[in-house]
Image 1 (cartoon, helix red, strand yellow):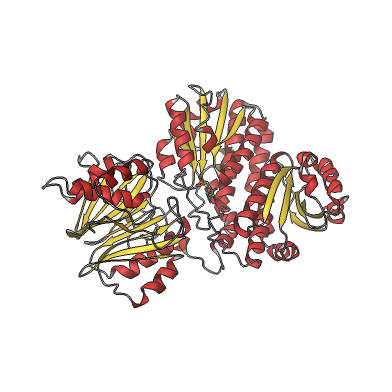
Image 2 (cartoon, rainbow, N blue to C red):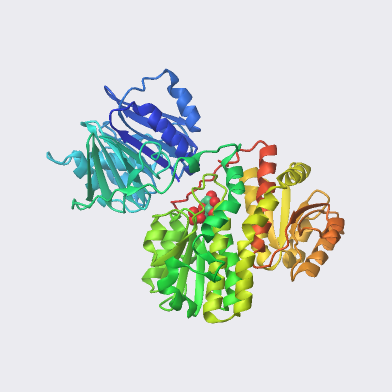
Length: 612
Ligand code: G6P
């Protein structure tokens, strides 16, 4: 949420900032801005996408070798030129970009108003720029760095910031608490960004800032301190993403690329864990805590958005096979509702980014109450992965499309492995069943490939309903969360109002919506619920609703009953969610493209929600 870039070195900074912002645009894209140090400091900002800023700068002086940039997802103040970052302090001494939320900004603003400061924007960021200036002006001898530290010590909330000071034209200062920042270490040059995406094309040597770190970059030197001015050891690591992962390649959109990557990303998630030879499941990251998890009185899975849907599937799997009670909670609710929680409880956070503010806060709350906190994350080194005692990385690779696809199937893959591992450990399933399911899982990537090879059929179905105003998704059992996720995909990227429902609940409300204008997408493979869902389909048909069904291949009965069908290969119910979601992802994608929507950057959304 919001992307920050910065550079100090000897290269022309403008293209570096602009390309960096384009790489980070998935984090927010309602306005963008840059500040450049050349002969003097210049600031350009514009409502809209990075390309709008680029166009705006086409006749401007963009020389300079030091600069910062920002792409925004609005929190305080509407998207506008005025509210776009960077923000400069009243007397122009400090210019900064910020990611996060300063929760006590109203109070700080009031104090600053009393001291004669004025504000041009509605943002919390401008408050921070003025606060830094206020401390800088307090006494002689307070330098930029100290002023930044003093101001940050007054801030309640989250920030990742990059600061330029008018009086120190050869310095770039960055600090983080809650919002990620990474520094790329080049030869006599440093790159700063919210994640490694803009950096890896320049250098693979990176430093991940920790909370309370303050980094001071000059040409040829990088110093790391904490907010109390104590030195912090610099650890230079290898970046965990590659340039190849960030290119769209032959695909028109990142989302389509990521949907098509799923057979491979599921294999990546299996790697070293799903052992078909022995056969066995090994979850190295959970090895030390497995006995405790297996003996838990209950497991609480928390997450937001798509990750919450993965958690729901985890609940079905763990309860069904390992017989451990599972609760699934929206992190945003869980953190505030004073849950009964304590030692003996396992809280597992599920998050693609590992930075979602609500999930992180819920996790911290659970840890304070004595629960064992675990994580399933995609981004290596992310806050959630660092703040959990143990966990499993999903290894789906960088996900750029805002609507999550491959990260979801990777999460479900991990939860399936976990459920089976726990079940085997607790002996709630026998060896034969365990081995059978290992083989079923191993077959998933090939089956996923088969589904993807039929993408043109899904595209044709998409054309039939692309004009719809609403859509209803129905599923039962473990496929009910797939109905929720299918509906979420559609609404996120096509802006069609879509609802997911447990098919058995349809009679209790949504059936009132059914008429000949309503497409009803039913997830109906041959499973335990087959007969039941046939009844639900008949109920819809009796009211002239249009049925699109995800069915097991060769199911003639369904083919006759439904108006349109998307086939998936026969599979065990435990692995069917991994297959059934793929046609629904494709359906949402094609509909959104047909409606002319910006698939990779849907309106109002952001990939990583680092604010409440
Ligand atoms: C945002 C994204 C969703 C994602 C959710 C949770 O809303 O747009 O795609 O599912 O955050 O994110 P996380 O990184 O915690 O999985």
